[in-house]
Length: 300
Image (cartoon, rainbow, N blue to C red; front, top):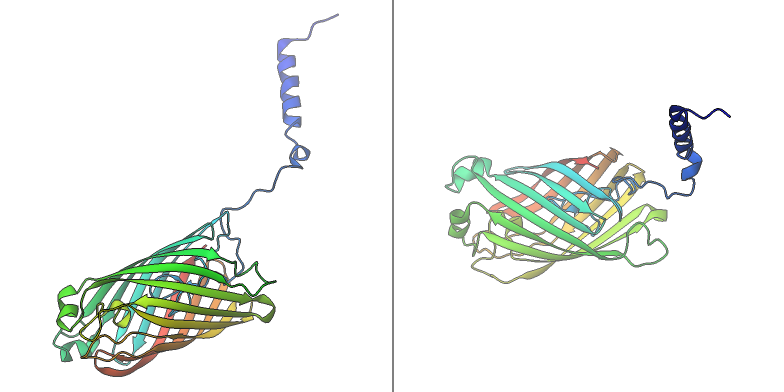
């Protein structure tokens, strides 16, 4: 009987090995989970004015980005607010980890425009502020918990540093740095296309921190209430409104609560555009500041 050549043996072994890697060999293997993009459209919120995921004025309990429990999510944003006498630009980055932890960085630039000269600061003087945020989902899942009234609840903080320390202290602020602490609850009712959010913020910030923290009237933490409501007109368009209370720490300029009415459009999970009418009340002795809010967000 003729012996089989060694090369033929190797070839036969290779064929057998390739056959073992046929699709049927993997029929019982678990499916590969993508690293990003598992959430429903718009359920990660947009970028709040201080960098956290939520509405335009207030954080929600949701974690930024479209990552689920085994995924990552992230986005970058740019926001511009223009009132009669002031302008505010904000840009930053938000990262969501396993739908549990959110980290955010934001930089704000508050342009005093003509009012800067009236205040003795110079025309178009800018107050610059950096914000680092952390948010942790404690309990609940806004999307999955549709059979219970339990909301998704998250705790967070925002550390803020105003670069114009000498100026904010000259107008009465106790400090140019401060930390806001908050507890947020978000309930998503998919059957009703409705999102409800309520939040309690403990803060010393004057005008979000743009005029420093604490003041001659009070240097204590104040508990301030914030809320949002959003309604989905379609899978990629939402409308809503927000309300945010603010402390009143400075004698030279009273501070009032803020509110907005917004529309958010997300053609896909990688980009969203938000536009709003925003009313911020009196700012640095100039009354009744209101105007346009526009924010662009890109991510996954």
